[in-house]
Amino acid sequence: MTRVVRGFGWLLVVSGVVVLLYVVYLLWFTGLETERAQRELAETWSLTVPDGPVAGGQPDDPPDRVEEDEDEEDEEVALGDAFAALWFERDGERIVDDEVLFVVSGATLQLLRSGPGHYPLSDRPGGAGNLAIAGHRTTYGAPFWSLDVLTEGDTIHVVDRRGREWVYAYREQRIVAPTDVWVLGADPLGSGAPTITLTTCHPRGSAAQRLIVWGELLGDPIESTARGTTPQEIAGRVEG
Amino acid sequence: MSRSTPDDDATRRWPRWIRVLVLLVVIAVSVVVLFTWVFPWVEELTQDPTIGSQLLRRPR
Image (cartoon, rainbow over all chains, first blue to last red; front, side):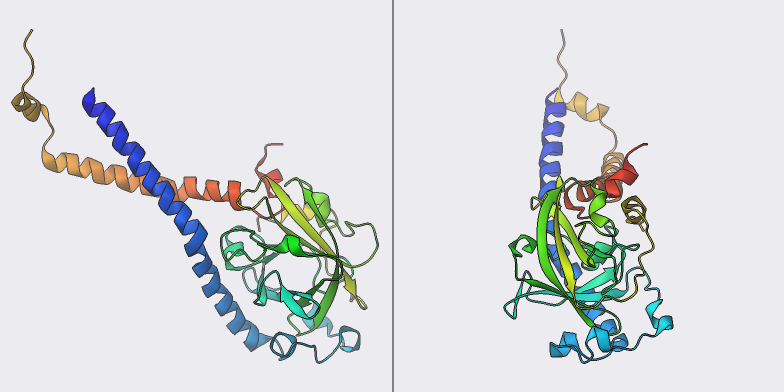
């Protein structure tokens, strides 16, 4: 009997240590994994995307003056590759994250280890529909840790793979259930304007709810490439 | 009633190499189970920032 109790005690001690190590790994070491992935994405980005806004701050060609190239517009970005670059500004200063965040194509948990991820069936940057991006609130570099600080007047900047910078004005944020797929629909705000939707965990450290941030495109949109006709279809592709 | 002595316990024990082998197997299986199912499940439960993925896991 004593041996059983002693064995159970050791089992609890070992389990506690394993859980503790896992929490330490999640909170601190996953960030290193994301940092390395973001560095790699930055390298491939610099090789494939024309020089411009990420390095220089302002686009060389404003969106409405760029000539359309249908072949390039229809380009499929492989899952896990750099899809776009993203940052947030308030009065010209970066907020939410000091660094430019490289968005990967795809939004599985595996892909989100590299950084924010683009929902595959949602629109492209500057598209006439809804560009939807998910990002971790905690762990894996916590790119959207401070997403809730966005307020009226802030802007969300997205650079596409052709180097064009698209600016979205912050409009609204809301706490929703993880199953509220309507937020990924073509026009979630009902305004008819091209939209960006950012999703992350809420509260921090829990996935019980989701924090949703919306912005609307400033400037002229380009033709939409969104392939999901309903929010459910978009959600159905989340798992890649 | 006779009580067992430490010597009796020792004679009933498995050989040391078997006990070490069992311990190693238990540790290996635990690590595989933790990293294959438990940790991904915990991560999904606490770190999933996407919308709608829970619908896919829920039976219709």
